[in-house]
Image 1 (cartoon, helix red, strand yellow):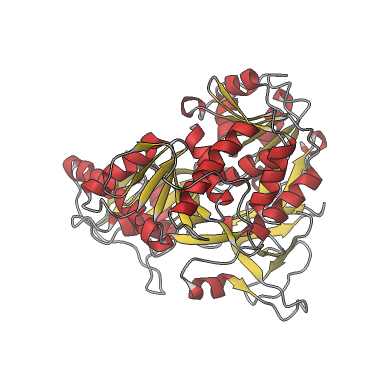
Image 2 (tube, rainbow, N blue to C red):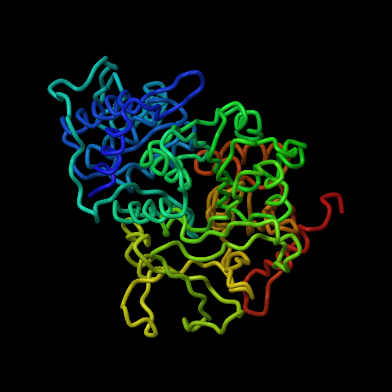
Length: 525
């Protein structure tokens, strides 16, 4: 059984229930399925076969019908943002071989306008929305592609067929496309179904951006169990307390920093979220202080810290925080990532690839059916990250996470951060090298180095750029505008520091630790 068959079966069993809630509109499983099958039929008629299809935009009916439609067509989706840097979008299209765009008509039109401005109007062959389409070089028309005809059920897919590709940052500045199969997603869903007891008709949040893999859990966990997906409006993403109460949610999922901000704003008052049963946090370290505050605000809910990079298919470990842990000794006062999901195995290894003694620190690695198929078009990176170990006689592939961790005295894994320069800003992962690569295209910059200043909980609070070239206010404005072509604004350094010479270590490499010490000093110093 493929993912499409699982979702199709659930949709048939819950046809009259609500599947989606956006603003004032609620859509039944029957209506959502009808829209998705229409999109799938148009894709099939245009010749889409087991290929990457761009899903454009989010938080609109066309986006959610589009994801289902792509899966039902036997294809795999690649999230694209209408407002993303055009060069980045074009690079993703070419890397994944995307011929078709699917989503809300207005969002697809916006992306097509970008291509036209770049002189690439025919970069894709067609745009498809639930009730309209546009072939390359033509105008938008209502209805399905001529001759498409209704599809009565999804295209059957083999377990190893791809379900989606998500692009994560690469150290060279080139994003890595992580290939995730139907089997990977189904393994995750089996695990989460066994961990969460939810009755059909439950209401769950849809907070995460499609380009961030917790969104996969938002969508497919909810739809596979007959729940209603409640989409958080963009205006309420930063402080969604009222949305949680208004929507009477049973399941909440977000990055921890949202809860931290809500706590600072005084929104986590006792009993505030009385309807919640499950609160899932992922994508960043979960501060114990925030977990405790959320527990008070949602007294009937579990408070869960989930862990797993994109290569792990969403999450591979979780820890349910309990009231008795308030006085427990924890590194950095961060909630543990816990123990492995059913079917997964996690270990800690040293620099030689050998398992460490209990309690010792090393790199977190894991194996199991959720481990993805590697990186799109990059066998070298795949072979470097997905490896076999002599001590594991099963011969299975293990993914090397690049995260440092150890198993504490309670048998729970604690994560201590990254081995490399990969960081997370507001829950989104990026390589420092990607930021530097984007900024280094500006001719006024010389010997550019970017460092991340973190707070006591290990979360990035500021990016600082160092250079030996002088930058005027006008230069900075031009740099920010220029870099927007290939770098999301959230990753643009908060400030730049000019040095006569960058510090170097005895190895000959730039001494990033010394730069970090400078960056931690007040900006006026």
